[in-house]
Length: 422
Image 1 (spheres, one colour):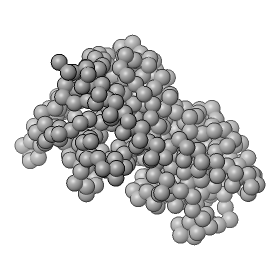
Image 2 (image 1 turned 135 degrees about the vertical axis):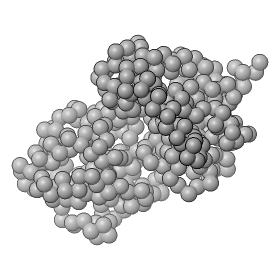
Image 3 (image 1 turned 135 degrees about the horizontal axis):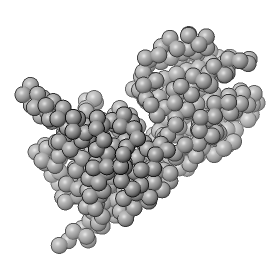
Image 4 (image 1 turned 90 degrees about the vertical axis):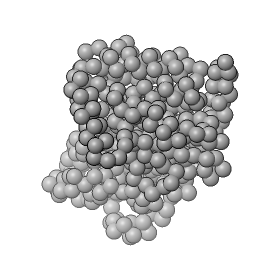
């Protein structure tokens, strides 16, 4: 089978890692897979950048076009579309097109309906953007269910300068009609699938396939050895936190993390903090007087897995999530997770067995749970760690994840051939 995947980046961000891991897993099973991306960072011949053309004149042309688009309040209306993809030969011999994240400014808003005229489509939703006028997550706003009229927050990522959210919502709704009979929507969580069922996408076939991780990489390792290798204290309870984009990521609740750390300082013992992400706040722990280590962005999965294995708890303070890879990765390494009960997180954490979920924003309860985990016996910690590993092996292994998509590819091809036979 020949598959074309489309995503904004090839490896940066959760959606990109999901797509890339799936590509590699499918290739290992004998399939031919290419990725068309807006921004290429890996030296991989399977990945083709499908953004606008090269050269100073071309770049100047696109800058002018994008400035006009921004002034109007549009989002991705004037970006490259099907012609660019066909010119690059990306559709040649392809059996199915697997779309991931489309926002990022690299491709046309109408690309889904354009592609659906040529090939069967699988579209994996990694956030709410396909359902809203412009934003990746609506949070408490429910205007996306009707028309996104009078958007209350134009600055929410990805931002627009003028309120054209309702126009963009209607454009997406019109494009979605072409998917009926030509494509299948995948949500990695029950939470997001329920939102799809409440949206203009509800009449399109939609299924759930949770994200998966490579358990050969993300696996338990001897804690003592990992701490020695990473220069971490052997005799401390280590709290791990990681966020793509660091403090600048609006979804990750960095302010809530800070509140938790401040509260933890009121009583002894105090955990040791390992904070991973862009080190734009490298003096933050020092300013707080909290002992720990702030590490920049980690690109190597094996290094990330070692930090998970060296820690005692993974703390997630996100205010919205779909099916977060970091939680699955941490659990696969035997690291219990403490997180707010938002989005699809509750589908990954079995309370009291492989971690805990708490009410969104309740930093006081977060501190209480952390204190309980610190006070737990070695036997209790090992039991929770063992269950964490088993939960991933059952629900989120690469094997399970890849097999589910293989079956879906076959299904959508038959579905598309039947619907488009005339």
